[in-house]
Length: 70
Image 1 (cartoon, rainbow, N blue to C red):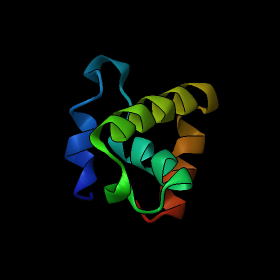
Image 2: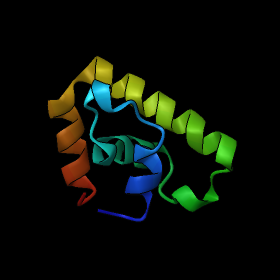
Image 3: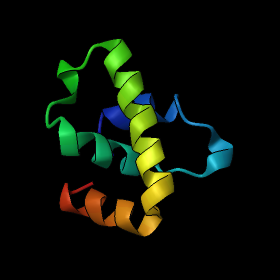
């Protein structure tokens, strides 16, 4: 887990079953330094990552997460 996991989890709907690690991984594809995002950008990137996970599936998200060591 990273410092961002809990922050990301706070934006997720638990019923969707989306792993915060997967969200962080997709966010890191476009932004290697998440601390540079404004609060509004951060929320926007969380939403975009969730859409990517829904489209690409959990298996792809897990491979991306593992590639970042998450």
